[in-house]
Image 1 (spheres, rainbow, N blue to C red):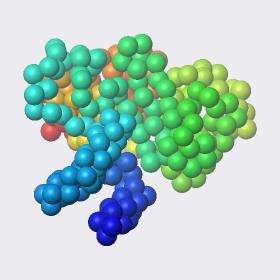
Image 2 (tube, rainbow, N blue to C red; image 1 turned 180 degrees about the horizontal axis):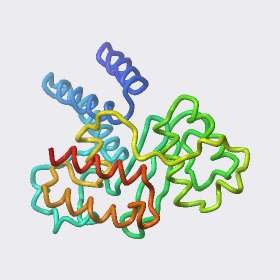
Image 3 (cartoon, rainbow, N blue to C red; image 1 turned 45 degrees about the vertical axis):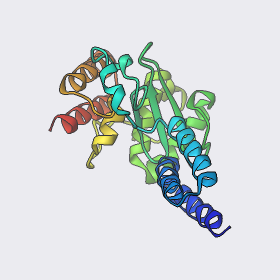
Image 4 (cartoon, rainbow, N blue to C red; image 1 turned 180 degrees about the vertical axis):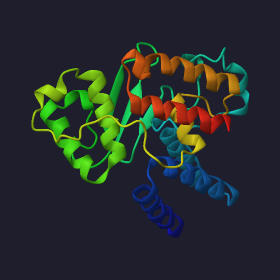
Length: 229
């Protein structure tokens, strides 16, 4: 009983403090601890929950025997890690469909949390932009990128939007290798050739010269530099 209460308290703390991905790792570790103590009845459910969360959150886990199945380096050939390139902040994320290059998005927290961007009206998106402009520039730029790519005339239609609705060419801040892998849509252990191939394919879609987004192009370039440095 004490072990059950311990697991429950730790699980709730990790979930609310660090999110689902951290919880998946913690459950796996607790499962190993339970297994080492002979608590098979506790270990098996913990492993099942950890596996479910890993699949649900696109946890960048790559099994050793899967590394020989990487294909020729095209974005769609990766079978582990993020399935599609994803650019995210603490409040919002956009995902690039590697088949048709369409950009979708989702609100992660705050107002409209859990809702897909394509289900929100222009007025709702405009309201989110105003919120992000005050305290979350990263989310603001991601949302501007989404709207520029999916709502061609939104600036003219939303005349009430603040005047500084301009597209940034990137925000300062250190990029981690894990974030770079998500942005380029790579497997957990990409080769140099895979990094260059995915970067080139994405830039064909999002370079400003091709009608893309300066902000997304800057993120894609930074991701490549991070992984090749």
